Each structure stands twice: as C-alpha cells, then as structure tokens.
Image 1 (cartoon, each protein chain N blue to C red):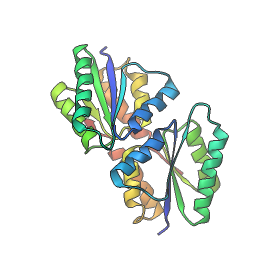
Image 2: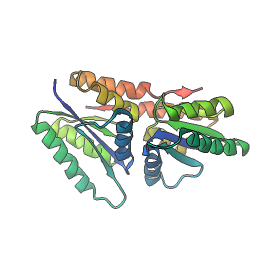
Image 3: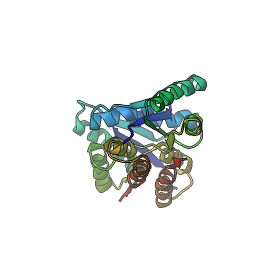
Image 4: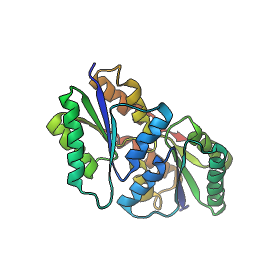
Length: 130
Length: 130
C-alpha cells in the first residue's frame, strides 16, 4: 500500500485552519500540508512550494492528493499543473468531511478506491436540515 | 424577497477564515457571520452567541442559513437546535463553493430555491481530477 500525502491549497488561510480543525478532532496527522494564497502573495512562490512538496513526496514513493477550494483560480491551477506534471490527484470543493475520510482511510485503501471514498464522503457530507 | 443571513459555525477557526477567503474573492459581504469552537471554549457560550444572531435576524424578518462543518459535534448540534427553535436552515459539509453560491444568489431566490442551489453547488463543486 502506497503512503498518501495530503496537501490542501486555498485562497486565503482557510485551508491552513481547516487542517488544524481536523487535527483538533482527529489528532496530529503525518504527511499533511496546507498552504494558502493571501493578498500580496506571489503565485509563483506558492507554485514552487507546492512543487517542492509534490516532488519530494513522489521521489519517496508516495501518492499526493491535492485538495483545493474550488475549480478556477490559482490554487486549482497549481493543483492541475501538478496532476499533469507529477501525476498528483486533485479534488476540488474541499470540506472537512473529505479530510476526515482521507486521514481515516489512506492507510487501508488503494489510490483509486481512496479517491472515490474521499470525494464520495465529501458529497454525502452535504445535507440540508430540515 | 426575504433577506438571508449566513452564519458559518465550525470546529476551530476554519469557518472564520473561510468567510475571509470568500470576501477576498467576492468582496465584503453584509449579513455574514462566522464563529468557531476552539479548544477550551465553552460550548454554551457559543450557543448563546449563535442564538443572539439568529434571534436578532429573525426579529428583523430575515431568513438564517447556518452552514456547519459536519453532521455531529457541537457546531451541528447548535445549528439543529436553532432549526428546531427558530426555523433556521442548516447545511452541513460547508465548502467555499456553497458560500459563493449563497452570496451570489441570496438576493434573487426564494428560500427553498436558494437552499437547493447552495447544497447543489456545494455538491457539484466536488470533482476529482484526473
């Protein structure tokens, strides 16, 4: 079973706080990164930082799942570039349910099965009451 | 058309940062609140703060949509209590796509139609690449 690295990229700091919130619920996670693009930040610096994490992870034989806030904009553009160049996997529309599923399941599922579980959980986690 | 108040409640600070990230993309939003439950916080104080916002909104004739991180845990328990007591609407699994839809559509849609659009956009915003 390949190890899987989780990397969250969002506009602003919410992905960084999202990872902290998940760790508040589940405890500290290994191979988990979060980066944000804030006003005044250089997109190219963010891309380089993402590329460094993705390359290092791939070189040590790990899968990389990049979770971004939405399709469109720099976070997803960077993610899709990493998908093309390094065979990273990208999931858009990140919510906390996906991350909980990813951290709960990544040691026991093959990559394709893991990705389906993560996107499925994210979708099923969206419910309206009443 | 009733005005709609958006209130995000999450474990930790990620909902607070999520609202800031949306405002970074869309500009400042009126009738938009975000609260977080951090380690050491008193759940009852959070509930009272939520209740104050919901009551004031309802008393001024506004609808309230509470977006929480996940079903289960204090944020959703507080939201569901507000649904029962004050007819607030609750959506779980919040992501940035839902908030963008809510802020884009809340002035032009009836409540039921708005809720369906928000949950639908949240779900449709979750995609896997490649």
